[in-house]
Structures are given as C-alpha cells and as structure tokens.
Image 1 (tube, rainbow, N blue to C red):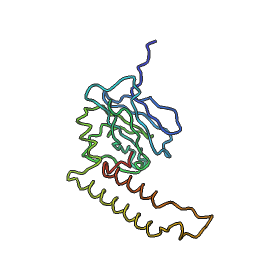
Image 2: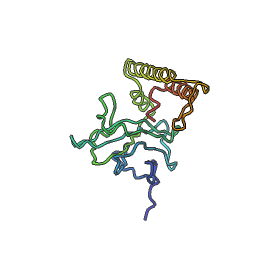
Image 3: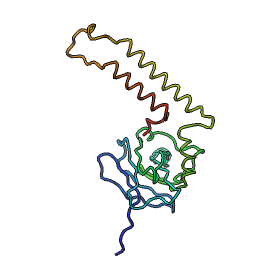
Image 4: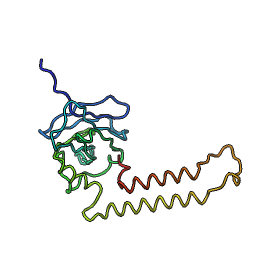
Length: 207
C-alpha cells in the first residue's frame, strides 16, 4: 500500500476535531465540507506544514453556503493564506444569508453546488490574490471604505458622548449593591483602541 499524500491544508471549527479532508475539484482548487454548520461562527484555515505553496503562490479562501431556495451555493471570498501568512481566522456567521460573489470577483467555485457548508481554497498567484482581496475593502472609487469609516467613527463618538453624559465621580454616586458600574476610563481605552484599528483596517472586525 502506498503512503498517503500529506495534507497541505487544515480546517478548524470550534469544538470539533481538525479537518484535513480537502478534496481536489481541479488542479488548483479544493473543498472541504462542514457538516451541521448552522451554528458555527468562525473557522480557522491553516497550512499544516507538510507542503508549502510554490514560490509566489498562495490560496484564496472561500465560504460556500447552500441556498435551499435556488438549489445553488452562495460563495463568499473570506481572505487568503500563504507561506508568509500560514493561518487565518474568519467570521462566517454573518455570511450565511448573503448573496454570492459579484462579477468583480473570480469565483472558481461558482458552478460547484453542495447541500452542506463548504470551505474552498483556490491556489493562485500572490498578485492575483492581492487584487481580489483588495475588492473586499474598497470599491473602485474608494467610497465604500470612506463611507464605512465615517459611519463607524460617528457611531463611536455618539456612543462615547452618550455614555459620558451619565458619568459621575465616586463622591457623587449613591451606593447601590445591585448596580454594576464601568469606569469611563475603560470605555475611553476601548474607544481609542477601536479607532486605531479602524484607521489601520476598516474591516478588521471581519476577522
């Protein structure tokens, strides 16, 4: 009996054993099925270390969710992994009811249909990966990122102003054993940290 080929990719769903059962669809695309995926929120995709990507190559990571109404699968681009980024965690709970990728993306799994949720990995050049991943965080004129950043900033400022309007010093507080309090400094620290990460990447919350 021949020795089995070492698995290149691994998939982790919280509370389950590691999956390495990626099945090739084409020489450059593979899928792994996630059974009973109704309640999963995050997935982790990683290189097992058995085999690296070829030089200047990486893998686009897709999430496919079955659409019972149309009998097709809705595929969404999550991000990528590479030799320089051998693992990534993705939030998928908010993608289960969204529509498929638009025409701006090259979807190698568009014709692949499954009755279960699936993770697809498409091996492509780093250049192609960078071009497609950039579509996740901006529109052609950059307005999507600008508008989203502005909305989040205004929302954070509104929340901080609202919370601050109820602030009291310890000497002003009336003791109440059943009430819990959060120091305003804690909210300010959260606000500063969230604002910094939002400035670096408007969609950091997706990961």
